[in-house]
Image 1 (cartoon, rainbow, N blue to C red):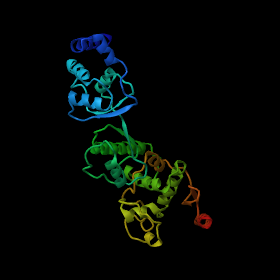
Image 2 (image 1 turned 90 degrees about the vertical axis):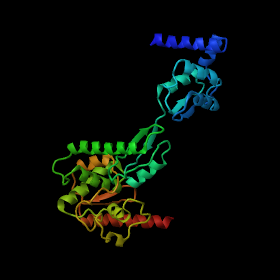
Image 3 (image 1 turned 90 degrees about the horizontal axis):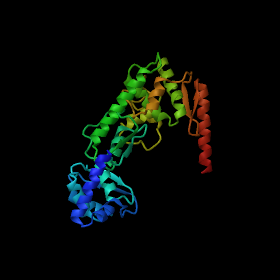
Image 4 (image 1 turned 180 degrees about the horizontal axis):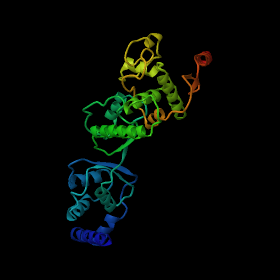
Length: 329
């Protein structure tokens, strides 16, 4: 490694001796700190030659002598080694530092966050708006096929590739957690686990509640009770293409569709969102409880109960809190 660096340094000295008449002076300019006053994010377009790259670096204020930069690259035959992409150049980087960065291929890493509980349509909409990605999604994934997670990508990556990664991630996670499931659950396939997990995801945003909410639905499935989940009714009304934008009405609960768990027993025909790993794990390993009901407690969580009479009392408490809030407005 030391011998290779010495050879490169010698070649650079020869270049400056031939071009500028002063090898030491030229070498010092090439290796000393550059004119950048702050860190720079720069995009090297695909197909860019050394002429384009040198002018771009000069225009961005990263180098002051583009001709010497170009001659160095050409003499060392490094033009084909530099890859297109997005790079971070620290302030005061010398031309040699910049050349090293462009040769390294270590591009800026961007992040795409798919939040837990989003509809597939919402994730795809965010993908369309994500800066730096290319192409369009050519095949719409099914609801529940994408794993909510933070995905890293580089400038120029394709949207279809990112969707494929999300689908593979969901397949791998669901299969992994399926093997670790509790024995005796009324869930027969990994898909059914994703369906129930999507309901749990929509019912609570609290990590500490997921396993208990899951236990309520597991208990109801075991007893043959209807799940009576509001988010499933909403999905039946919107098909996951939009937010409902209003509270559910009594007539909505009586609206006949396959996703209405107030009318239909068992699980709905498919997921109602894209659940995260924690919710899938929760339905496959719920806490032991005899809870059959839950309702919002007015404080961001839920009140759980084993009987309908207890549940009705909790509902009355919630209604009272709601009335008090209205009066204080």
